[in-house]
Amino acid sequence: MVESLLFYYLIVWPSLGYVLGALGMLIEGDISWFTLAFLVSQGFFNLELMLLVVFFSIVASDTLFFFVGRWIKYLPKFVYLWSDKISSPFDKHIHNRPLQTLLISKFTYGVHKPILVRMGMIDKSYWDFMKADLPSIFTWMAIIGGLGYFSGLSFFLVQQYLHYAEIGLVVGLVVFFVIIKLATNYSLKKL
Image 1 (tube, helix red, strand yellow):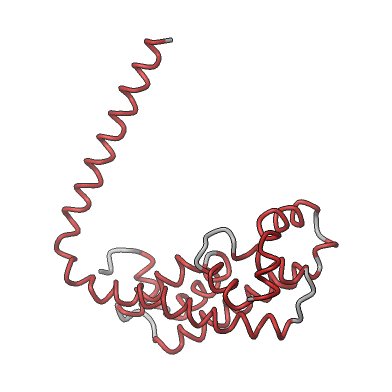
Image 2 (cartoon, rainbow, N blue to C red):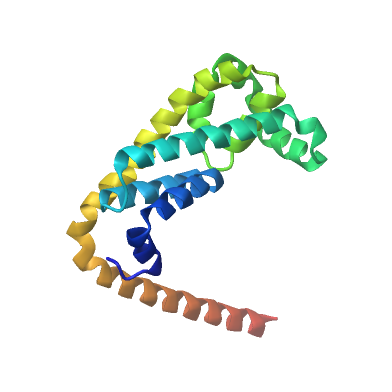
């Protein structure tokens, strides 16, 4: 499995993985956490330490976006418009059911960050925000991390068949490009 330069550095310097994991969680949580959990199951990282890194990175990221909402009047107008357009329909839910709103938004791509910003904009207290955010973080970590971890455990069962998947992907790409080329030629003839 160590055919990659990145895996070589993870073996030589494991601390790099924790630092990159924390940065990845700040940028894109779902993919990063799934990948990190997969690598934990493969033995690249310590499970307990990675759970701490991921948890504190998520709390830092969510807190940052919450305070962006607090200070939004000092930021460029497009940030306010972005958050308002996506999350203002959820104001009633944020006020009445903040835990459910945060939990569902964690699994809805493109909605979670604006919801966090909106929670800061509507003057929710930070402690009320954290009371709703922490259970949603634990639930999200358990589901996404569990999927990544158990995918990694089952990886050895399907590893021998990955060569067939690679061939299938190449054939699929060739067929896709041939269809695109034929469709382009047909369209140009019709014009």
